[in-house]
Length: 437
Image 1 (tube, helix red, strand yellow):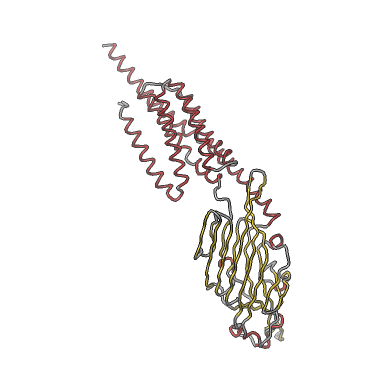
Image 2: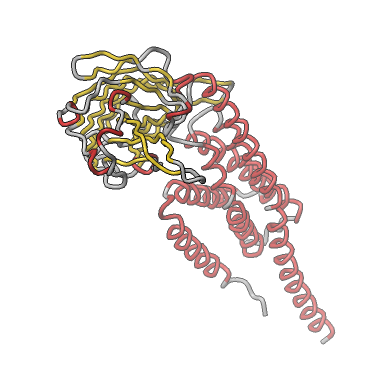
């Protein structure tokens, strides 16, 4: 009878130790996620260094570019009274949008490097053809004699003109060629823009005025065109294989192949009136264009992978726990800890390798190295080829599952929910062989 009591007490204590060990393993898994926060900090630091390298290149070449204009600027005189009631003259500015504008841009991209970091820069050949129809100056409600048509000018701007435009630009107005000069502070609806004085008279405003201009533009990462006309057509072509179209609308036509892309837009500007005075409008809200960026950012994907570190550790530890309890192959808590550290080092390997290669290749190399190390370590302790293969299979499924979640960004929640449900089902199935009572 004493032997039976001791046997029952020993079984109870063994089961109690099993439960305590399960709790300790779970707590260890939670603590092992702490290093993942340090890895997140390293990723942020590397991203900051990348941004500094990009800024260093773009400051010397040309940054993101947006072309605004051209449109017509005409000064006028407004009669008013000062505080003393005496008549004074106030000088104002009236602006007219072109009736139509067709912009064709050929972009030649290049990759520039600063250490291990790279940024996309480009040279763009910009050709703009447009027309001003009869100007609706009557909408301004200004007497004809107060409008200074002889001081009319066409103005346009690029965002970074100091480094972006490196040659003189001429405006073809009717049959004349007029050189653009820097915009003065006095006239400026477009700060740091360019202006070209055009011949206008009271009689000529009722006629159509075709115009064109052509210039080369340096920039990086993004190219936009503000649709500063009533009717706008934009065509962009480039050898860049991975464009990201941006702006107020997507292209009406686009073709993206291994040799590059071609995109065309048509846009009817309804947000900016065809004629106005003194007011200022945001042309950025009418911009169309494309981004020229490196298509795969290893830092973003590594950051997303780190978020699943706790999932990877818990599933791996659950597999270890089921193996040692079902097959009676005990593992020490130190073994759990060392295997967990190997799982954490996977992310530092992934981060460092992805800086020199494609993210998918980096994930494969880091995954194979981690799976091989953990499988060898646990297999040498369990002394079982069959169980070693099982550990390798579990780790392979876990890393493949996380890789799928990273790739399918829009379906990450769905994939995550289905995967966790299936993992819980597998654990519940094998845990039936455990006696907790």
